[in-house]
Image 1 (cartoon, rainbow, N blue to C red):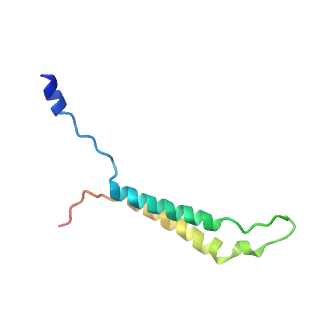
Image 2: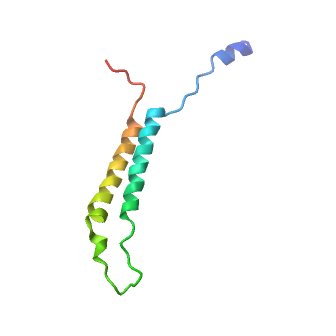
Image 3: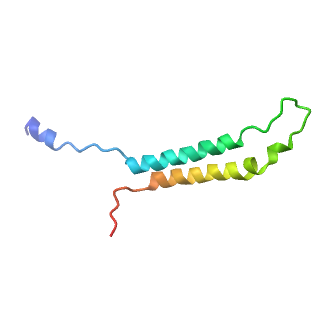
Length: 87
């Protein structure tokens, strides 16, 4: 077998994910990052003073929901098959 035939039979290299997958992964990471940013803060410099602002809607409901939505988007991005043909 010649060297030319070996080159022709070499498998074509492809990335596992396509552009669409990476787009959804970026969106998911942005949601997760935004959720963690919204969770931050609410503390106080004086340890003897209680700040009830730590239990507001943004930190207890909104931020964890954004993180979970971001994780869901990440799972969808991994499972998404961009090569699937519509009938």
